[in-house]
Length: 333
Image (cartoon, rainbow, N blue to C red):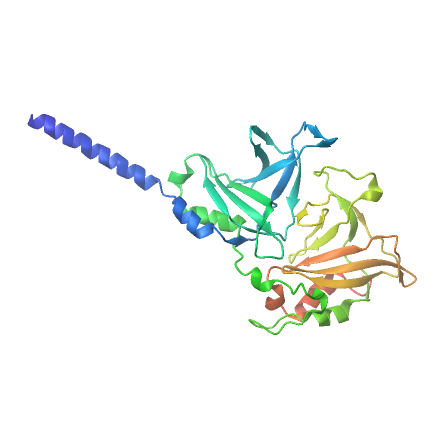
């Protein structure tokens, strides 16, 4: 009897140790992730998908059917776009994305077998998310990630691709006035004088060191335009490290233009039109001129200097002007 009792005690001891070990392995706390993430505003460092069609799409009113698309991010940084809509599970073929400067608010997270899925409506120039424009991010950690990783490790990966931006509301421009003439008192250090920039730049003749797009399209998008003359306006994006991209989609959605129509530059150069600002960039309208007069039948270009959120309080008027003049000098090289 004593041997049986000892055997039972040993078995119970082993079971308790196994249960304890399993408990230790389940290191990710969903409650902890919810507490850390829900309600946070983020500015993605990746291209976030919006809608997509499949490779052999069904047609609705003559156009390929579009479905919500999920942006999948793998540990090595690779990105894929996947449709998971009802019973339809397929890789995306043609898809649209949100603009690079878009910010989002995390409203839901879901721990799945091989990934963490984050739902986040877009928030453009507002601290209130738009429920009609949602993005879905899947961080593909692999099977068993909840027991092989810690909550801190998961949060570190999220921060890498979805850095927090809790100060979005505090850097919104005054939408009741043209942003190019808004005068804001100094807060948290020197602020950029937008009116001064407008006075210094508007009407100046320039000789760009880059190609400036007037129209463009992405081959990934469903093209509904009737010919090249119907291409949508494109925006030239200039980043602090000097690289240039072309955005082919107006509004909060965007996609890089791999085909675009540049503004022609002749001996008399181009001319700066309006200067405007937003929370993460300053935008310069560039006009094509002939004999000193803007040509109305050639669409203007728009150069957007992506200076980062809060640039109006973290930079000076002089430093912004230097960044602009480097790309849009008033003398031909």
